[in-house]
Amino acid sequence: MDFVSAPSGESSSLKNPVLEVEAVDMTSAGVKGGTATENITAATEEAAQSEDETDSDGSGDDWESQSLYEDAIQVVRDEQLRDGVPDACTLEEAIAYRRRLHDIGKAAFVEETIGRDTVTAKKLCTAFGILPPAFLDDAPDEAFHPLLAIAISREFQKRPKLPQYNTIDDAVKLLQESKNIVVLTGAGISTSLGIPDFRSKDTGLYSQLAHLGLSDPQEVFDIHVFREDPSIFFSIAKDILPTEKKFSPTHAFIRLLQDKGKLLTNYTQNIDNIEANAGVLPENIVQCHGSFATATCVKCDYKVSGDDIFDEIKKGAIPVCASCRKSIAEDSGVKRKRSSNGAHKNRKDNDGDSSDEDYEIPTPGVMKPDITFFGEDLPDEFGHRLLHHDRDRVDLVIVIGTSLKVAPVAEVPGVLPRTVPQIYISRTPVSHTEFDIDLLGDCDVVVSELCRRAGWELKHEMIPADEKVEVLPVEDYESRHVFKVVGA
Ligand code: OAD
Image 1 (cartoon, rainbow, N blue to C red):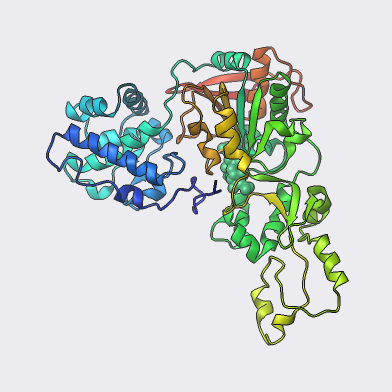
Image 2 (tube, protein in one colour):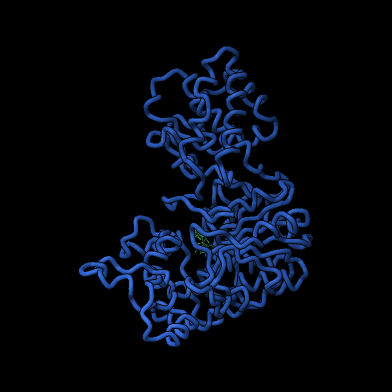
C-alpha cells in the first residue's frame, strides 16, 4: 500500500481531487425527469460509485481539496455548528439527521426530508458538513440537490456510531471484557516525553519547519526530497529521536493490555520505537511507518542497527555507509565512472567546469533510517496482518494520539468490522471518522483514569499516586468526555 498524504498537510490524500465531483452527473438530481427524491437518491448512488473509484481512505475529510467548487465550497465543522451558523442546522439537528440517515437508508431519508419538504436541501447540506457556495446564494433549492446527493453519499459510507456505547463506564466495561484489542497510535502518545507531534498548532514539528523553505513541511519525509538532499531530513531527525530509553504512561498502558493477554496488535505510526522500551513485544506491534531501529544504505542496501548511526543523527550529520566506505578504500586511487551516493550534488557545486564530472571519486551511500517516507510503500505486514489476522478477531479498537490524517493508516478504523466498538483518545476530536466514545484530553491522564476505574494497576513514575481526574461532559455529544487532572 502506498503511503500518501495530501499536499496541503490538511488531510489524508486521495487520488485526483477533481474527478470525484466531476464524475457525478450534476443534472441527475432535481433537473432530470422523476421526483426530487428519486433523482437525489439516484445521484447518491452515482456519487458512491465515484467515491469507490477515487476515495482511497473513505475519510470524507477532503472536501476542502476535493471539490469541483474548490474555492467556493466551505467545510462547516461541528464546532462551528455548535456556535451557530446562519441558515445552517444546529449541531443537535445535524447529529439527528446523520443518525436518521444511517437508521433508515438513503432513499427513505431523502423522501422523509426533501420529499416531504421538511427541510431545504441547502440547509440539509450543512448537516453533513457543507456550507453551500456563495454563487448559489440566490439559486432555487433544486440547485443544491447535487451537492446534497454527494454529502449524503459520503455520510452514508462512514462507519455509523454504535448507539449502545457512550459513557466512561461503557469504555471501562469494554476494556475489561474485550480480549482482542487493536490499539492504533500516533505521535500524541510520545509528546509527554518531549517528542513533538506533527500537526499540533504551534508545537507540532510541521509548524517549526518554515526555515527549511519547503513548499509543504511534510516534504521533509518525502523520499524524492530525501534523494535530492538528505541533509533536509537529517537537520530535523535529531528532534524526533528519543534521547533516553523512556516511555510514557500510555506506552505502559499498551504493555498492560499485552500483559493481560488483551493486545491483539498495536499499529503504531510512530517511528521512535518507544513501544520497545515499554516492553511491548515485536510480534504485537506493526510499525506502520517503519522506525529508527534499523537503517539501510541507499546505495548498496547494507543494513545497520539504528544505534550505530544514532550519534551522527543526534549531531545533525548525514550518516554514511561503512560498507561503501570500505569498498571505496579497497578501490582507492582508481578513477571510476561517477556513481551517486543517493544524494544529488548541491546545485552550487555543479557550477563551473564539468569536464571532470564523469570521473569523480565515488562516495559512500547515505544511511537512511528504515522509516516509511511519503512516496514509499508501507511494510507488507501492515495490510496483511490487518486483513488476514486482525479483522476477524478484533473485539475493540482504541485509537490514541493521532489526527488520522495520513492514509492508509487512517483507513484502519473503517476497514475493521463496523460492529466492533471503537474508542478515540486524544486532545483533539476528529470529525471525519465517527467513534463510539471520544475520551478527550492528555492521553496519559485518560488511560490512567480508565485503568483506575477498571481496577487495574498502571504503574508509571509520571502518574502521581494521588492523581485525581475529573471527567466533564461535552455539550451536545453524549459520547464525548473531557478528562482533566483536578487542580492542574
Ligand atoms: P499528528 O501530529 O497528526 O496528530 C497527533 C494527535 O495527537 C493530535 O490530534 C494531537 O492533538 C494529539 N496529541 C498530542 N499530544 C497529545 C497528548 N499528550 N495526549 C493526547 N493527545 C495528544 O500525528 P500523527 O497522527 O501521528 O509520518 O501523524 C501521522 C503521520 O503523519 C506520522 O506518522 C508522520 C506524519 O507525517 C512520518 O513521520 C513518516
